[in-house]
Length: 77
Length: 142
Image (cartoon, rainbow over all chains, first blue to last red):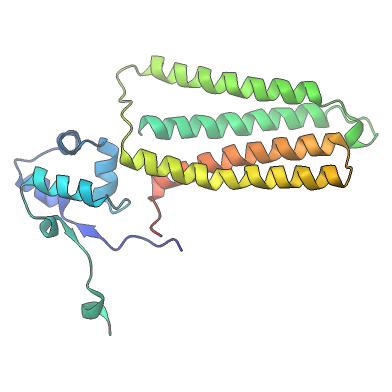
């Protein structure tokens, strides 16, 4: 079944915190197109684990500083 | 817009225009008799050939119009490409099974050829449309 991604991210804020890195610079460093970086930032595309690690390394932070996923036990009523 | 998304748009537009042209030509030849008596083979072959040439010409024109545009194809392009091919492929199978059943039932060749052609066109259109939607709205998570 098709479902929207529940993965959220802080890439935009982290880019600005990391010497105001542009989307094009980040794209070049992780080996994807600028459009893919835009899609990831906007939550329209969930990157592979490998790309996620490359993003974290490029921004100089840990993986869970970049991406978050809601814990079902915490969100359950 | 990535190079691959532009290619998906070209495929979508060319496929729709080519089939619409074919339908206009064939339906324009109906003169009160049965549709299956209308000459269609030449129009069908010219439309298929024309669509292939138009697709190639449009991609060359896109490259000439913007020679500095990136042609990089990344993992997202490949995922979207696979999704589009997967969705479009189903219509090829539907066309093949339909043609087999129609041949077994001894239907007129006109209908067999046209159902196969229509399914090829639907495969291209739905596959390209899937890619365009995935680029615009996001890749679905299963």
